[in-house]
Image (cartoon, rainbow over all chains, first blue to last red; front, side, top):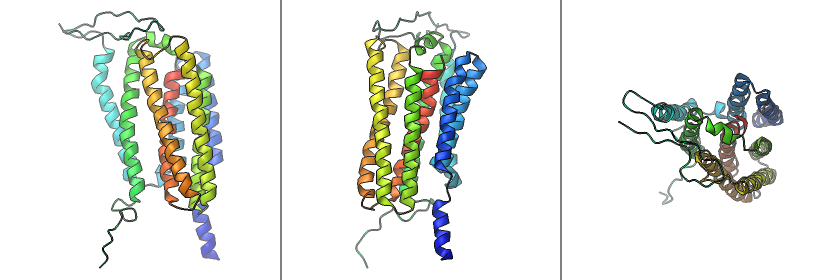
Length: 127
Length: 192
């Protein structure tokens, strides 16, 4: 009897999924309403800060990553580090418009709906 | 001595079932795929103010509705997992089918949204913002469609109380697809 109860408890030892879902919906509402104030800091926190919190809640409570062996979380974190390395490596070329020996030519954004396949991105020109 | 070969689904040096480990590896590779795409989007967005004006044309309410749809689908996916843990295959299958219905809703809403945007001239070739928009959202939608198809196959077996461990495996994948959308939503729909 006690064994059966323990077995039952083991199977039901999980978070209240509906409660987690309700929290996620509340966070969704905040992330939509926050940017309506038009304040940059509030937008960043409510849109992207809350996205991180939502992702954490899903990973922990729905994907149960917290009960997996530690290396699973480390594996995921390693992939995120790769992503950051890619960003750090590519961002200077994309985000800088001039360097000590080069400058990007100015390109005007093509208005939407006119079907210009080349778009707005300037090419990098080395001198 | 038996001639049967051992099947690598019940033994694992990794400490977790092989199938689950495989799903985590899939997700690890997906993080790099979506991470690269989103990272590229972020650096271009920060570098070019014109992208902000383009992002203003996306419909926040449609994006929010689809976020609600995916979050709710994830709830049913994890409830299906809970049912499978209890050995209730039929209940797990029903909940997986509800998850599939939400997944299909997501794709239908996205189709309407894209139809509306394309009719206004915001096509994939309009400029690089829309190229990123359709590539990122399209790749994500393909993952939703793939998830629904796999879930239907898993549900078919689960209804017969077969291969119930697969309910958890497809659930982990589905939640990851949800997590990707959680980041796509503010990037494409909110930050204007």
